[in-house]
Image (cartoon, rainbow, N blue to C red; front, side, top):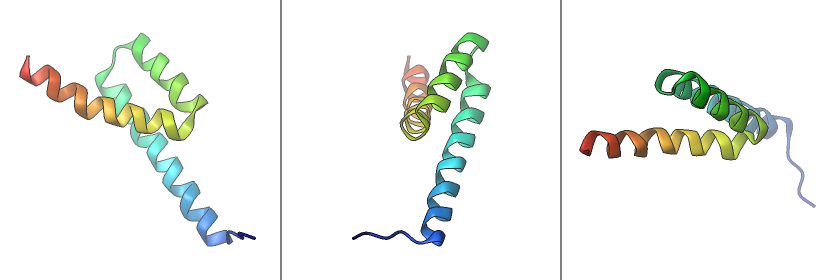
Length: 68
């Protein structure tokens, strides 16, 4: 049986919260109002997947736009 202690839960919750905050900040800086609302709903409805995909699209999308 796998038992997760309170310290592991606190670390995972802090990591998830920081991912969400970072993703929302990056989305608010670089997206238009409508795209930010769409990203915000996606990040808040699927927290881990939405935050990671927003961060990945921020860094890969910027490199593609710089080359064009």
